[in-house]
Length: 537
Image 1 (tube, rainbow, N blue to C red):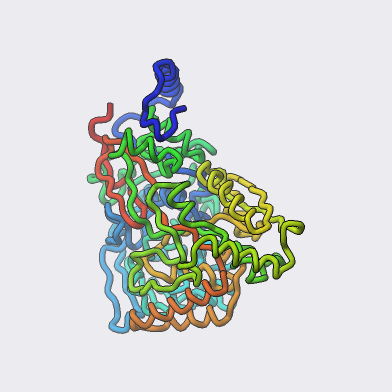
Image 2 (image 1 turned 60 degrees about the vertical axis):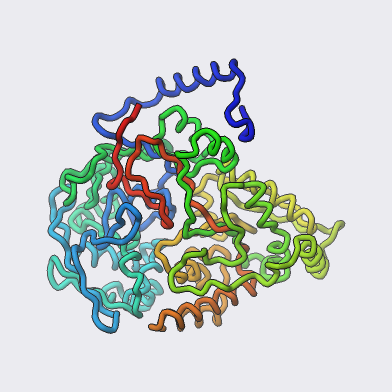
């Protein structure tokens, strides 16, 4: 195929073959639904329709069209009233009273405050084993419930009537409206759960309170959602059907996009950025993202307990080469974990060697490796776990060459994204490619990843001093002082080489010109509720 730098100048014979391919693809694809529809390339396969058991951005895309928390996102992904039409906050910031709007589940049963109370108790119950339970630790007694020290009934949340939810917090949280848009805070239909138990989330039993309902789920292919006629704002929902396609191979998805089989795709292939810029520049929707790509070290395995090894690998990782020569889409090299633009955060923490030339970094890394007994005749063997995404595999091959310079023989192990996440949570890796996209705009959402025992603390980092700093920060009302305490915690983790920050992310969407209402934003959500179709060819 044409390389990106060829700017689309393809030989006539290839044009003919390509045209036949696109015609065949169009002929073989499913017939379009009736009425306005949207085909979204969504990256990976979802694991569940139950908000308590998902953890990927691609899953949150689907669930965010189906369910609605007390707050929800506007077209720019800013928090607005959702299931609650208004709320009040006590002067000390510790008690929030939410008033549930008059609206119903897709089966016509009213949504009540009890649906939220039940859902929050369920996600925090350690028996549920929900990966994002810790997102609700801001609620009074939530952390003790997750630890099994208190029963779920001890949660500091009350529902005195069907339309009032009184929420008591462990500490003030100005970011609560944004946090409550997260799937961890979605309601569960209590009437349906009483009837079906965990099977409430099967397609046949599923009810939702958001703009869409689930119609079908074809594993490893797509999920179909249709407009919910009982949604409280249904009159302003323009797209009748949305299909989320499993597109783990971004390069193949680009072909589908070019053939008009997909109306949107995330992510686009970084390897094709030259072609994209030359041929469809207006379809690229990339802006800075509250997200970071990093490498996790499994500190439960002996070699990685040695800080010298973690430091050596971080020194050998050439961030500038990855960003400017391999990916080339505009990302920023990362020498810390908190992206630019995070609210109320000084953001001056950094790895100590940031200003050191790369040649000097390699020399220092080799010296550290020799101290540990490694060298040309005694090389370290390790495995790098990564998703099957072609861009990640391509980057992994370059990282393999970088680490080879410091006496490391690295084997690359790639699996589908859901399996990759599972093995990271099970600590089944040596080092692993990971990324984190903010659930809400606060530095704690990144730094909580390193709290001892956290579900998303893939590397098993544990430092009581770090935990104590984070606890102190969360109890600090003054936002500037709170930010400084969290920055101290971040610097402590960087000094420990608790993780290897790689680069700060950009959103990676391509969107057809007939999709209207798409507004790129730092959180990366573009709910179908706000989109419309005009001028589809």
